[in-house]
Structures are given as structure tokens and as C-alpha cells.
Length: 484
Ligand code: BES
Ligand code: MN
Ligand code: ZN
Image (cartoon, rainbow, N blue to C red; front, top):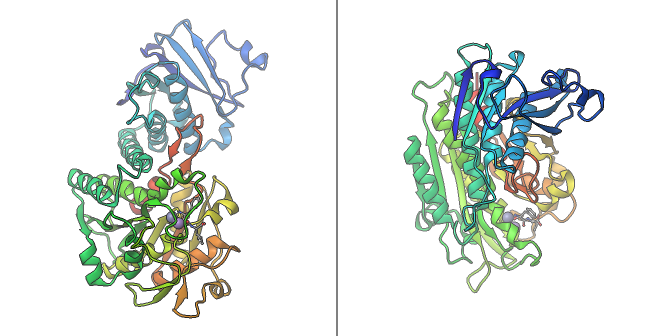
């Protein structure tokens, strides 16, 4: 997609459609169209649209009036959403050349970034494996028209493109079916991306994992014909900042989760191809990090396996020894994410990470607790959590903190090993986090349960169905904005 910043008058813009933002308290309808407001046909509410044809004085063929809500509470995240919805509105009408009039007071790098992101995210469609693409008109061009604004607007454009393309990269990985995205293929995709962007890349194979002693991960993987992969991506800054932080991003990469011997019901099991969305978020974020070059080193660690059942599969009651040395009684083979993350968290610490953030489609319980709008967030470190909250708020990715506490640890007790891998139905998202905490140890750590937010079951006005790429933008912002 052609994406540019144009400094010219809106009247001069040639386009299929020129998008203008319509606020509740401040109308920007072209001259002569005021009666639309007076009649109540338009109120300026978010996601309200009106398409005007042949508006006098404009060279553009159409004006798309896009409701933007209240101006006084308008956040750059709202701009991202409005633009994404506008782009999808236009694509549905086979209009591929769009421009946006960015009002002068919104002509900041932050808003230019958000608008670019909106265009690229709204354009994304998962039709790679459909023979007939006729339904989807890709956006050919998106021009952001500004009347003033500083020289720093170009940087906003660049940032927005990198962030959104990286998020779409993660979304596309999430949408791949499990037959076409095995742990080996996921590693290949990460490697190809690393080659393009200059990241360091390494993958631990099964033999190496056995040598190191990653018994928790290997127990999950042993039921599958597909070999596991521990994917490691490394970003090193050219001019490292003072202090010695090394950020570790850890992502659950279960390419398919049948549940194993503790098999899942058939209904909606197809959705379990999404169980690698934590890994996809980490790989997508590492892409953007490579291109935006923050001043701290970042390591992405993605344990990837397929959770299958068969003659070699692990049984409920099996006891495995994790890389940390702790023993685990596998009481339910469907609680596999925490098993592979246990070894990945220990490994990330062995690689020298001083701060850990993990992302995982970990529990159905978090979906019961928070639904599909907030990611479940857990942390052992208030300073790290403060940084993280800043990043998520500026990126408009809602999170809700849930507690950790020794009282929940009781539920993980095992009669035969250091701990069991399940804590019962009550507080299921919390006991899963408590399990991970055993392996994060003293290292400042955040756990993000994205089981409810990584997947969009039905398309929304601003987003296609399928993988959402949640956390990519926040991960990148956490790294890029890291200051001592
Ligand atoms: N990948 C699932 C989590 C999941 C379940 C996400 C449903 C979205 C919808 C995870 O591996 C899992 O199966 N968790 C179990 C844990 C239980 C056995 C303690 C769950 O949530 O049911
Ligand atoms: Mn499972
Ligand atoms: Zn799973």
C-alpha cells in the first residue's frame, strides 16, 4: 500500500474518497451540508458514516464523513479505530484510493502514526487461502493530508507503518491453520523475518532441549509427530543505554492444542490453532523492535509445540522435571501452556534477561473473568508494571490486573511432586499465573493472559475476523520508551 504524508489543501486532493472527521461538539461538514446535522441524520458519534458524492469545491470524488465522538476526549487510539473502520467501509464499496484530512490540532507524530496504523490494520484481510479474492479490494493508497505540522510528522508515518505491518504479521501467523504452521514452520517464519531485519536468530531442537533438561516442554511435545522448537530472537542496540536491563519477551507457541489425553470437546476445537498467538505477538514485536531500534537489548523466546494425543503422549499423573529442576505432576495434559512456558521462563533467565514479560492464550478462565475486551495482567514488580501500563495506555490495548498471592498457591499442591499443573476450577487464570510465578522467581515479571483478546470470532467494523495481533504495539512501545 502506498502511504504518504501530503502537505496540501484538502480541496486539491484527488481520491476515491476523502475522509473528514466529524466530532460531536464540532462539525466539519462541507458547506451546504449543515442540515444533515440539524436533521439529526449525523451526530458525530464514533463509527457513524456518511458518504457524500460530488461535493462542490473538492477534487475528490467523494467525501467520507467519519463520526469520531467527543473531541475533548479524543485519544490517538480513537483515531486508529476510526481510520481502520473508514478503510473497511471504503473497501466494502470497492474504493481503494483514500485520503484523510488531519485537522491542524491533530497534526502530531502520534496522530499520524495512529492514522497510518488504522489504514494498514483496517486493510488486513485473511484471504490467503481463498481462490476468489473478488470480495476484497485492497487499499491501493492512503494519503494523510496536513495543512501544517512539524518535520517530525514523517517519523510518525514511519513508526505507524512498522507497528501496523508487524501487527499484521502476527495476525497472519495466528490465522494459519495448524497443518500449515507447525513448530518447525513457525521457527522458519521467524528466521526469515530475522534475516530481513537483522535480528539474531537461534532455534533449539529436541536433542538440545533434552541435553539442557527442558522436561516440562518435552513432556507436552512427546505426543506429536511434529518436533518442538524453542525459538530465540535477539535484538542488540548499537548504542546501549546505561544500566543493564535486558528485556525478555516470552510467547506461548502451541501450534495446535487438542488438550492431549485430557482431550478437549469437538465444539470449536478448530479455534485452538490460535494457541500460538503469544508467540506470534512476540515475533511480530521483535520485527518492529529491529526496525525501530530501541536503546535496550531485547530477547524474544518462543517455546513451540503441538499438543497431541497418541501412543507416545504423556499421561495424566506423569511427573516431569523442568529446566529449573522443579518437578511437576501433570494432572491435566490440557494445561500445557504453563508447562512449556515454565521452561521458557527459566531459559530466558539463563540468557540473562533482567525483566520478563510473557504472553499466552493460557486459560479459558480468563475469558470467563474478563470476556474479550481486557487482557488479564499479573505482575510481581510494580516498577515494571508502571512502565507496562504506560505502554498499553498509549497503544490503546486494555488490560486488567488480577491478583497473585500465596493463598492461591495451595491449589497447586501435589502429593508426589513439587507442584501439580492445575489448581481446580476456581480462580483458574490466577492459579495458572501462580504456576508461572514459580519459574519467574525473583526476576521482575509480568504475565499476560490473552486467551480472550487474541482472537476476533466475528469481524468488527474496524477489524477483520481472526487473529488480532494484540500486544504487538504495547511490547514495542515498552521497549522503545524504556528510560532509566
Ligand atoms: N489454550 C487453552 C486455553 C484456552 C481455552 C483458550 C479456551 C481459549 C479458550 C489452554 O491450554 C487450556 O486448555 N487451558 C485449560 C486449563 C485447565 C485444564 C486447567 C482451560 O482453560 O480449560
Ligand atoms: Mn490446553
Ligand atoms: Zn493451550
